[in-house]
Image 1 (cartoon, rainbow, N blue to C red):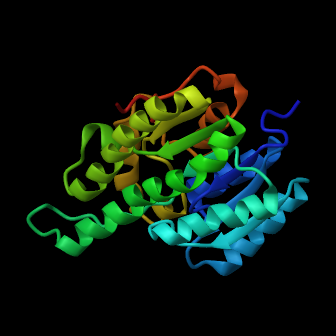
Image 2 (cartoon, rainbow, N blue to C red):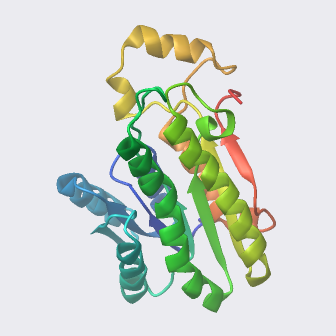
Length: 247
C-alpha cells in the first residue's frame, strides 16, 4: 500500500534540490503532483515526464508564489485539473546572504517576500478547498537557520523563523477542520547548489554535524511523506528538525 495513494499535492519550487526530491518521492508513494517553478522550463518538462512515468498525474505550473494573485490562480487551476488539494508543501525559497552592515533593504524585502509571504499566499489559497473536504496537510520548509540563526543570514533566518510562528498559528486555527500544519527544518543538505562550493569548506561543515555527513534531498522527502500521510494524523503545529543533530 502506497502511503499517499490518490492524494493530490502542490509542491512549490520543485525543479531542483529538495523540492525535486519531494516531488519524486511523493509520486513513488502514489500522490498526484502539481508543482511550481520560476524559470527552468526544460527542468520542469523533464520532471513532469519523470513523475508521469511513475504512474501518477503530474503537471508543472510556472508560477511565482510570492505574488498573492498568482497563488490564488494556481490553487484554482489545480482544483480544476486534479479535483482536490490534499497536501501543500511550501518549499520555494531564496538566499541573499550578507552581514547586516551590508545587507540592502531590497535584499531583506526580497527574501521575506519569496520565503515567508509565499507561505501565507499559498496557505491562504488552499485552505478553502481543504476546509470543504475537512482534511489537509500543510508542510512548510523552514531551516536550522530559522531555529538558531546564522551570521550573514539575518534576512533568511527571519524568514525561516517567521514560517515556524505562522505554521503554529495555522495549526491552532484549522485543527478543528482536520487540517494539519507542520514545519520541517532541514540542516545542511547536499544538492546541486552545494556541489559548486569549495570541498574543504563543505567537509568542515560535515565534520561539525553529529552524524558527520550532509543530508540528502531524500532525507527531507522521507520526513515530508510522513507528515503528508495518515501516519502523522495526530501531529500538528510541530517542527521536525532533519539536520543530523545540528540543532
